[in-house]
Length: 325
Image (cartoon, rainbow, N blue to C red):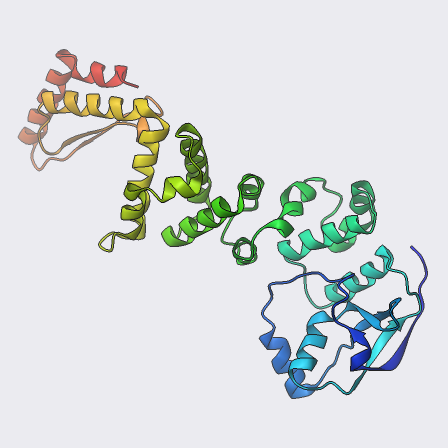
């Protein structure tokens, strides 16, 4: 690491070049708590600056602090730490990162922008893995690149969902393969249905597969009447909408499923199964494991239902159901 010197000096606000984003790491963090703090007790943690080639100062660390000071009208003069070097350098960016780590951790969105910025400074992945990720608290795990690198290219809505921990990071590789419209549609579907993370994985794969099978984009698929009607049905809960959509998507993804389902219902109807004797097929006929539930209030009622079950076995109804999966 190069050795840099800096001094704590007064700086005029009009000498700070806010538009120089050499070291800027975008953040979706709420700025209001910082504004309240500075408004009430002043600036406790001065920004770090560096001279640039235009005769002004670029911000190394403290973009949000400078922004708040401007919003509060405190734009006469402030004291700041100023580096003596005018050349951008990854080592100076590291100073900014370490300064932030003294009072907070980086969220996944910020980490993605950090990875992007370090590579823009010419650092290889190997160098970042060896020298920077351990300092940031991520060890030397190369999967960090797989999980976080592309987040910087996602929309604000996706980034906000990631920060709020509403979506799993392992979805992002697939999301990044979608165009902007399909990506926007997916986050809208997730939010509208209030899907949990496992449901999100399931729905994403179903929508991607069905769209491909039908030669549609995800935006086109979700704009079809059957989809929008379910999504906007006012009398259904989020769970009911989710199950209805899943059922129809399964039918389109696995055409054999609806055929098998109809055959199963025909066999069930022919067997004349009485109330209180419930035979459940495996979900979406994915396995060969059936379940049986018997409800009764007397021994005679139990024996009657067992007799009917035996009849179903002898007449081949149960075997026909098993043969469908």
